[in-house]
Length: 294
Image (cartoon, rainbow, N blue to C red; front, side):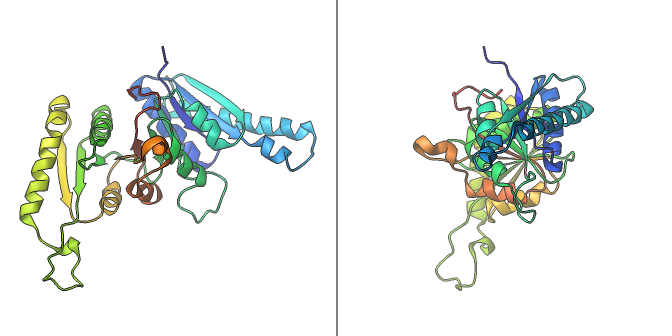
């Protein structure tokens, strides 16, 4: 039987330390072990430089230092959890994907040590968010108390996203802000400089609100302890969720993909949140094996 656990990726950067602390608190909440993984790409360098084993030994010592420091970070916020550390040789993306294959959750920081400091999201985090075989949290912005926010539509994946959002809110003892956005059609008689966002459509707003209430009815019954606030907006989902993230502790969105490559794509809303959210972002997706995440 699969052992439930959380995987946190680390490279010793400040962002990855924040991710490890977040993952440790979540592991403590769920009562699951935490597996900390650090990958160092020694083989890539060895292919270019014919250097001795002493450099590999030094790389391993550095990797052990990184994982030991990450374990200390985890125990500093959740001293009772079980912590495993793994220093693996290889490219970080495939190594972390392999490590998360049997995990309930993968947690990473928004930026690591590599790349350009001016970029808002690291390439490793972006690729993991798009390809993870389980739900993934990208830790960015501020850690705070506050509501959990979730963006939902009427797609087939909406229940999966709501499940993750209601579960997170219940676990944290937080309220839940449920956001539905849509762009009303602009009447032809309006001036061309009037956008859909500016159009007042009280009847359509009421219809959208009623549909969302119906969508949430069973979830309210399942989680009666979670206070729910509903927000219907004409703005883009990304813009509304980024704004709400400034007071939220977590934003939940779904992944979006098609066919056999479903895990290789991430919708524009999720991608914009990973760049601009002011709090951690949970990308809700089913486990690759089809098992439930919780």
